[in-house]
Image (cartoon, rainbow, N blue to C red; front, side, top):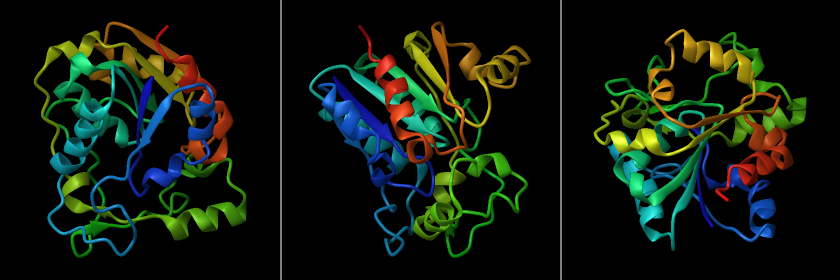
Length: 231
């Protein structure tokens, strides 16, 4: 099966490097994406928008030989959900890792300050989000921050526009890293994730770690993705 892997913000295709070998060893074809402006820290990010990132994911879906397993991480889940909305007939299942399908009218991820049209990764501990970086050694965390690629402002502040309700019929697997499946179920029940609540078939999987399981628990994340492969 074709598995399209959408990185979260501040990351590119390399974030999946420890995950794809297991998927490919199981006989699947993988497309780990580097979205526009995230090729390197030196890339030109001027004028890049959320639509550009969604278009890159849609192009990968269109290039696949058959139905796709679409995997998103963090805010990349919102991008993946927009791509699903554009091609619901081409996606067999979606896996959201540490993130949620965004609702119509929301910003992808607002609340961050931009400098010269781009947004650098914050220090998560300074932001009070210590759980984000569980699972890294001190050296690994330092390397992680050093490698982080700024995000185009137009991507993070882009507004979600959804059109095709067939997206609700595509099954979803929610991989829960720094929060638990039970916590996520409570958030859904309390009305905090309305887009997820509208999806007809949802499976919840715990992979306990910080926000970046593709780096801190790649083998377990790969197993969770393989478990979501239809059939």
